Image (cartoon, rainbow, N blue to C red; front, side, top):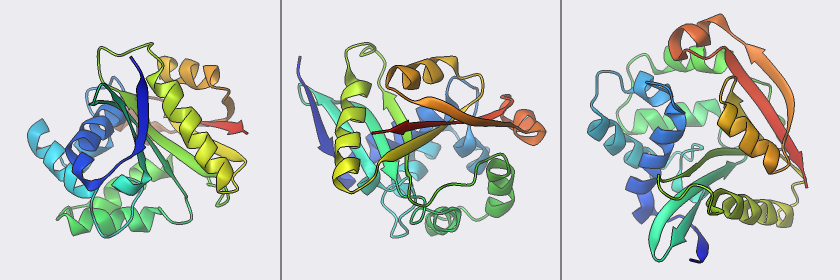
Amino acid sequence: MGIKIRQATADDASFLAEMILQSSRAGKKGGLFDLLFSDEEDAEILKKLALLTTTEAKSHCNYKNFLVAEIDGDRVGTLCSYEPRISTKEMFIKALEEIGCTKDVEETLDVYYSCGFEQNKSTLMFDFLEEVEGFIDVGILKALMQKSLLTARLKGYRVAQTIIEIGSLEAELFYKKLGFVKKAEIECEGYKEIFGRPGLMLMSIEF
């Protein structure tokens, strides 16, 4: 059962949408996109996320930032890597507006980003490291990370970071297994009220 890692294409939009939604919820009832697309059923949220991956505005959710893992031709996992200097909050807002999400977007994102970290513009960021159910512990996420780090090294990066929620123990343990270390964490009452988690943790790896 070999794992194939490839660059995502626009044809992967629906699959990327599923992984993005799964990642954003991270075991919670709702995540950022439930908040942005409030009062929508999952099917409608997934449609909007699929559109978000193919917008002209190159947000961090754009398909060009993703790697896809396949086993026997089936898509089984994703990893997004993006440059903070390009995929900014402003670019994210433009992408959301492009798909018709305009109601209270900036206000909603202010709550989300207020519990965050000052990002180093020369650091590569990882997000949406996910696999479909039924393939746990077969090396999919490790293969995705290894491929992404190799590509990052060729681009001249030496440090990569990811942000996870405080209390996401499974995610924290997995990143530590991959060589990441905790650099900082920040607790925010507003974030806890909305998402039910105390705040966010910044993890980093040098390679």
